Length: 367
Image 1 (cartoon, rainbow, N blue to C red):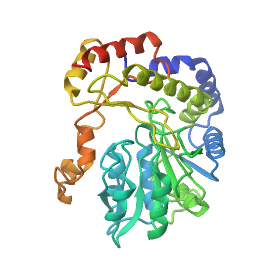
Image 2 (image 1 turned 180 degrees about the vertical axis):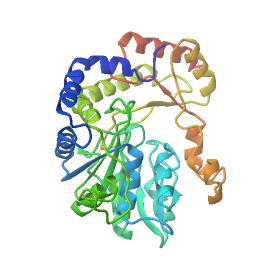
Image 3 (image 1 turned 60 degrees about the vertical axis):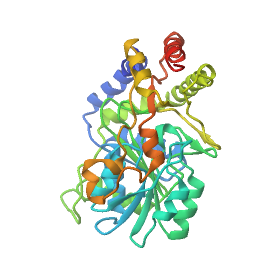
């Protein structure tokens, strides 16, 4: 089977370094919120050009803690995309606020700034653009809208570590950003992890308090918080992978261009487009086709893994039926959910494997 992502190959490539780092942690006797976590926070903050980086347990917690730190809750609304993983909206609901959806751009698949402004009400407090599949959203227009209406911009950068917009890294484009280190992410660990980045020191102080049970002094608590800390072993793994991420992302971009080169003119296949001023890091490589099911079946029969991201838009999820959205409310997102499918994309995909994928797509994509 040619996998969508091959974690075994990835971690084998850095196994020796990771085992040494993990051994150092074991010998240290410090396993939670120790020097490796501090080093990771410092290095990511420096890389992104922000003053604060706060490591947390996962990407979902990163969103939840950020929203709560801003005081967003019951009676508030947060605008986001209906075409993303559930956690983007789930975090809004978790703090008691209401997710308000705005349709996406048909080219980049990101939230469409032209649709955002129409959804703003007096209850709106923030915008959460998702850099979907590793491509940055149109942050200039989003930030301009946010400034006009005095809204916070929270980047959901969980799929986009290493991407950039106008040569500025994601994670530094809004008021605050949230990343996931889930194993399949471009920068991932062997479990869950996440980080929040910002230049707002007051916000960072609040988030640090929230992640450790609402305290800054052990056994003294002045608010209800969470247990959302990154373990030292995960930080050690991430420190190794952080040294490789630019090379891994570059290899993804080379693979993406090769897919385009050989598939751009195949009938009924539409390749993903890299938007202007963006550096796409291809967390997923999603192709659009009216013949999705037939093509996916051909790939599966050829022992090539494929997947649909995402088969049901968030506004049509059962849990959000109370919001009374209906099919047709967000036609672009719904169109994409019925036509997009992912093919293998990871830095350890060989040219021979990619040739096999291309061959199947050229045969079956043109039917």
